[in-house]
Length: 125
Image (cartoon, rainbow, N blue to C red; front, side, top):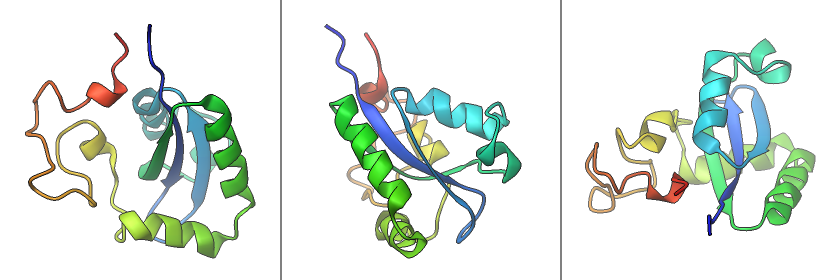
């Protein structure tokens, strides 16, 4: 059986810039589409190509509920959420691809780039 992970994520155009909240079952593909400008609407118009925060869920209903709640949050609360784990609003794409560590990881937590275990939490077997 394939276990799915659903993600709520935040994209931005720069530190302190525009904030977009979304939900997906395929974070890597979704972020790649945003980065390439393949998505229409808000993220394309405001050049939101930087993944600055994400959270995983086992149940799609929980992910959708979290996305809806975050969209109702004040901007300052979203900024606090981002900066709690990513204070510099660093683009998390390279870490997502296993090329570097996430800002909240220690060196000991980080798997070496190219290690087949790096993206196991995103694989669909």
